Amino acid sequence: MMNPFLDANVIIKAFTENNDKEKCRRMLYEEFVTNTLCLIEAQHGISVIKNDKIFASDCIKSIFKRNVPIVPIDKNLLFESFKRIEKYELSLFDLINYVTALINNCSEFVSYDKHFDGLEIKRVEP
Image (tube, rainbow, N blue to C red; front, top):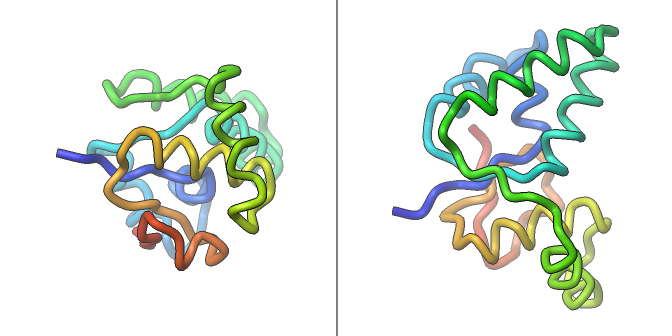
């Protein structure tokens, strides 16, 4: 079965106080795919919101304990992203995340960012 790709904003909301926290937290207990860039973005976002980089790092480390695919950002992924830079109206960061989902055959792109709407992989919110 194909797994959804989890964007950084879903991970951030899972570990910070907001109306979507429980929905996002539940996503972390399902099967999903993410990448190292999303984890970096999430650690930074949580750190800024909570003003606590240790807490933020512990949150991300807890994801490592799950047996979910965390795709590393390597030169191949970067190259595949650069190949598509004209095709998509996305920042390079978002493009790397979207290409990760594409090449890993993800079923959905789970994100609150509406600029992922209308692409080959359907964007859904938790």
